[in-house]
Image 1 (cartoon, rainbow, N blue to C red):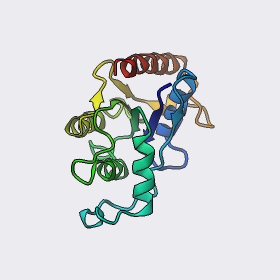
Image 2: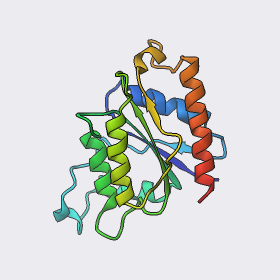
Image 3: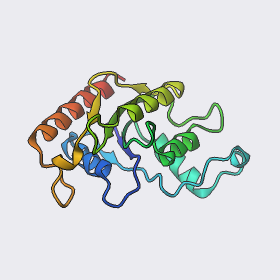
Amino acid sequence: MKKIGIIVGSLRKESFNRSVAKYLASVAPKSYPVSFPDIGNLELYNQDLDDTPTAAWVEFRNEIKELDAFLFVTPEYNRSIPGVLKNAIDVGSRPYGQSVWTGKPGGIVSVSPGAIGGFGASHHLRQVLSCLNVYTMQHPEAYVGNIIEALDDSGQVIAENTQVFLTKYMDRFIHWIDRF
């Protein structure tokens, strides 16, 4: 049994990314339990706190340590990843030499109401994760554009082509995890 953490880079109550993340969790095999680590309550990373980390930092780091793989589902803000996601990555990567991300497999799904599906965020995140020694799945890449057309009014993924794509992506991600 391998535990997957799906880290959603959007805090919005009716987040398109959370809708996609929930769908991905729903198609994961039962032998790969999925959790959703909370990144919204983490104080901003400040190196001065490395010796006396906040309770939220300690809890988050411990939760991430227990996971076997990470799937990042993120929107694109200004051709990059949201600050809340970058902060979570930074909190988990410090103090230097004690990163909770290191050596584990990861995947990226970017989601956008626009046509290019968060391409910039995905590639920026890929660059950050490579620095942290997260073995990020290279193929298939997942840029989910025009997401509004794929969801119903309650935020459920209902577009069959999107369901098929996300299911295939999760299948490949599970195969990627199994390589480690």
